[in-house]
Length: 401
Image (tube, rainbow, N blue to C red):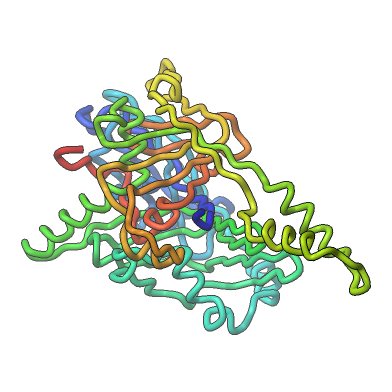
């Protein structure tokens, strides 16, 4: 049985109604919320895409070439709180978006910093990079350029680590050819429950290079897309999971009640208690069992059994327990097996999905899902869908996918 580490990635919302639709414009002006003076040099981007720009000296900005759809627009500037707003762009329509940024309180920040660890990076930096950037082949060519902006706080009694960033993280991905500006809003490692959670707003900027470099980027992006949650979500939306090589089944997890009983019994056993050799042998046998029983049901789930269409083009993904998803076209990477101490031969890439605190999520044509915090991923996607393996939502599906 694999170790299960659930990863929650808040990718945000960006929904384009049609890849071939008319391209529209987003314009606006960024000002100080208190003084109404323009904020120059503010970063304005559509979450999890390559669409981005900066405000001019008078605070104005313009983004063009955007397909009609629903998006999250993220605006940030040093000394101000990040502003996130949802917009809709329709056919033959451009949107003017006035932005008022609120000034951060320096006094509150100084008080808050006291609780962070002084040697946080030296103690927790490696764990942060492995959890956030990842350990996949792409991660070996990905670098965090400004680790000094990270702040670490360990809640020993509660059993979790919290990480914050005073500025946007600048990540250089020389494997896929992107520089990523990542506004980290939440990062937590829960040691007790083995759950990692991170949330934020990434902006992608394409790297330039010669023909050979660009060909390499295209090849690696296509290979990364083939293993991604994005590809599964797009094929689910299009109703082509079977054609794309995915097999989806229902999975159920139940705690091992007998092991829990024996564990509780062992905690209460005193040194003077006497048990027969048969009883002690039984205890040892039970303690070698898994903490839970996992059942994968044999019947394949169809798209119709998972999705409910809506009038606005979005689709509702509804399921109980877990989805057990196998990518039958691709085998597991050796690095994945090594990380989880698996000695078996590579099998199909197998992942699980869990709906958290919600009976459903919405999925979009471009592979995004909303609300993003309601979907947990596990197993292979835990390993291969971290920041080093992220592709922007406006990445076009390669030929053959």
